[in-house]
Image (tube, rainbow, N blue to C red; front, side, top):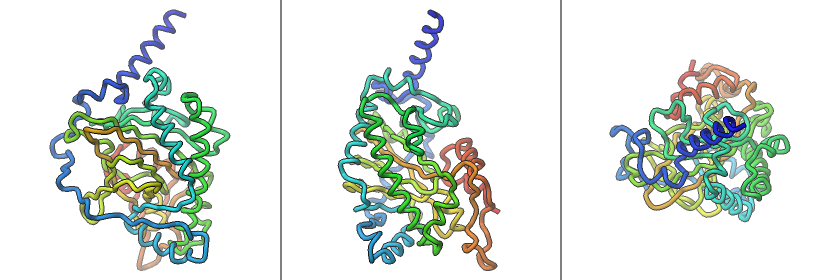
Length: 353
């Protein structure tokens, strides 16, 4: 019994040592977090004058739907936009951000029991960086990730602390599910497809939520919160809080995406670029660190079922626009994504014809 307890204590201590959110590990920058000079962010080159579209969804289900679907189509060509009047209550959003902050402010011992470096762990885990075992340079972030659908099947694996976590995050997950289904229908229509097309081809699609915790950093010039990448999802819906740090690559330059009160950021994932045969684009983005404030962002990822077959929609392909990508089961793409790490949009290239 004693040796088992010693091993458990040692494992907990090891987990705490690897978490940047431990309360002490972010006071100095360890070598594994330092970017080589040519990969460091040049903040002087970031555009703050350019913006991304903001779409008001108030009338999405009303007589102005055609106009809004047109706006969504234009935004999807760049793959990144914000939405307001989206139907998710403000109190639900604030409660979720509050409980996320409370989770990461608990004693680190209460969080470290969820620690795992296994990116294939199916339910709930707390991890540093993106893929701790493979990242050559670690991202300045810890994140909690768990499945949100079907909610009744997965909620039992969620954190037991804080005590209100499951109730608050469960309410948020239900609201996000409804919003994502509305967005999938509108994006299907924006492609000229029937409104249920995306929902149908994704099979028993999954819904994953991350809580990304970026502690303040003593020298942001040396680190990155999340390296530039596009998401492996169909779409990602992000609540980014009130601290800036999100950037998107647009028109050949990096653009700062400033927080907008009660808004969500929507970015298209690689699966939608494939289904649209490149008509819509997944958005390359990244997160930077800062010296003053901790930043929390909460993305919800809509992914296909592992066995869903993803390929360009038939109506997106003809003799003038041949298929750019081969078809595949999503599990193949997901495996490549986690194996390769956050490296721009390079995973998509593996599936080009």
